[in-house]
Length: 609
Image (cartoon, rainbow, N blue to C red):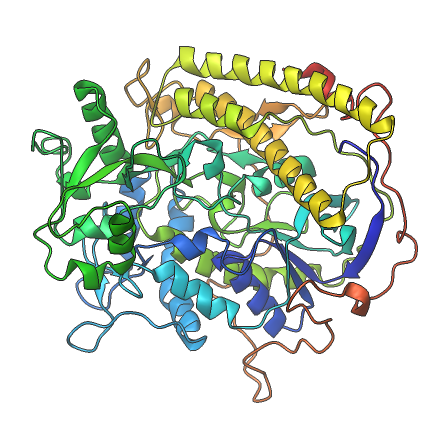
């Protein structure tokens, strides 16, 4: 933090969910139905999530011509030897029940001419098992159904830190336009989505700033396999376009579209037996290689032979139309862009991390499902299945005492986002090498030190009497600072992991180590050392606690409401009044401690490795 702040509000909950997408809201609903008091914190609004933008669908075993074994095999094949097969099987087996629960909430999926749920095929899948909604708006339908469940969500609020103690998680420090607040809780679920904002081009929303990875590391948890960033092969290319770009779903290729270069030659012919429906890492690398060979910044997707394109893919049609492209008559210019983090916070298949009371689910988590490369449409599946399991697992923390009694200043190096994105896009994207990774690390640390010097000067000026900042503006600024701090830490960890993996595997490709090394068929695990510096671990240590059933049994009493009883909560429909939560006079009005003298961000910043 750059200046002292005061705790303005407090609350108590059995579970705090950080994030408002499929994994977080599924967990919140499951926990609420079990009688737990849940509060979700979301930086944006009800649809500012990665879930909202998911086009393709949900991978779930089809009733005919498919099997759990087939889905597991496809997932493991795509995962480049790093999937945890037991976790894969566990999550795949839970898919049908999770989709049924979502349907019970009111989610509506597309039907075929026979009146049954329609299924398509995407890259890496051996059969048509992908269910979808609204043609290419599956994520939006999932988000709509979960939002309609009426769960308590504090919008416009960001988590600053997960506070731990002798019994594990004790609470969360958060910031909103009401100021800094404390939520006392024995259980926190990180469901913050991905890290797409590390890169200049991404399919992710603006809030995908790796918050959950940073919060987990600061709390003492391990992360693994962050070097495996999946780049979606086909994102709509427009000259000079940056930021979030519309993706052209893999389902378009599943329906018959083909990838060609500017001369009309196939991009994937001879690259993989499945051609354009090869796993995403294969297709992205093939596109990157062709662009490099031709000296261009994009290739093309030819979807002109697909009948009824506009009905099947209305979202994609709208995106193309906005760029002046008619997919029925024109080739669609496409290029790879950052899309999904395959690694993340290390958990078991029920979302438990190595820190008691800290859970993670969805894209932020590393359950072992994705390995070195995610199979298409397994992400919504994982969010539904693991989210529901976390909602059941947190009951194990119900009797654990939890109270935040002291707050410490968190040192947080950060680099300006545009500079960080330029570094990562240049040196740590689809194709990497050792020299580029070393250069990225050098430039990143130089930028950190430059930013430190600048902020020290600004802090001295502020101490001399700059005018106060409005609460809402201050909250926005604080959240932006937190995001940049999370991105900076995550970039450092990713570069360390990518440099350590001296091979090419899955969606991690190094031109100086083009082969896969059998000796490196293991996760790259990292935790912060006592000084706050990323440190490679020799092995992963998952929590060893009693297992839970593959799908939690929810109470079936006749009086169980379909929507949780929220009568004990304050009205959370807008900017909530938290006065309905139990008072905690010990912290109300407490000032967060000043940063150490001489360094506005703490001693950690003086010795960045």
